[in-house]
Amino acid sequence: MLAVLLVAVPVGVLIGTVGVGGVVLPPALTWLGGLDVHAAAGTSSWAFLFTGIVGTLGYARRQAMPWRFGGLLTLGAAPAAIGGALVNGLLPAAVLWLVLAVVTAGSGAYNLWFRAKTSRVREDLPVAATVGIGVVVGFGSALTGTGGPVLLVPALLALGVPALTTVAAGQLIQLPLVGFATLGYAAHGSVHFGLGTLLGVLAGLGALLGTYLAQRLRQQHLHRVVSAALVVFGAFLFVLAARS
Image 1 (tube, rainbow, N blue to C red):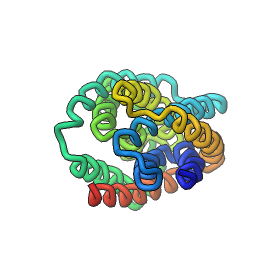
Image 2 (image 1 turned 120 degrees about the horizontal axis):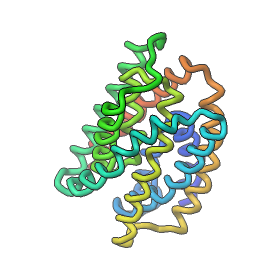
Image 3 (image 1 turned 120 degrees about the vertical axis):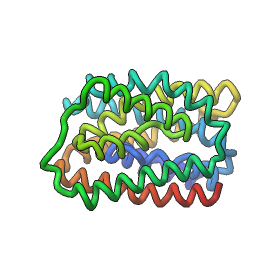
Image 4 (image 1 turned 45 degrees about the vertical axis):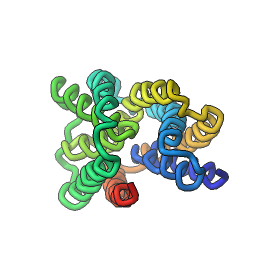
């Protein structure tokens, strides 16, 4: 369990900087902490509430939070998450992780090698498209048991949304998603609140540093960092799929 606690801070840094680092925590709780899959997911969801709050406030404090854009994404994501949760038990875990791995690694590779130049960017998307993306992300996140940014970041980067806007919106959208997920897991007794709080505080400190680092990087450099991180996490998800 000490090893899990040591993982929490770098996970938080990744969440604050590139948005997708949280996918590491549930497997760490399972492989290193000895928790079963459901308890690992539930405890991680509670911990991600801390990073979501810290990340949202961190970007807002520096005037980098796209409130309208993130609000529209959340409007679509929150109700869609209910449907994703209902479908979750119908598909094998290996299939879910494999789909997520393909989306994550594929988007990272596309953005890293084919969209290396970010001269043409889109600061915003049409309202209907934004809500629609939120629906897909909310459904997919609940379906795969992830917090939101794992699907949101690849989608928005592929559409040409700037990396800083993408990561900031990911902080906001995860709040309702992990909030509902925590309630669901808690109803089945699958949340270790003490451990999750400790992990959340440590990861929150890391997220605070991550938001600072993300806003210090130039947009083009941040784009490359996020894209490379997606490729790495995609490979990690392929490993999860193989082990499921």
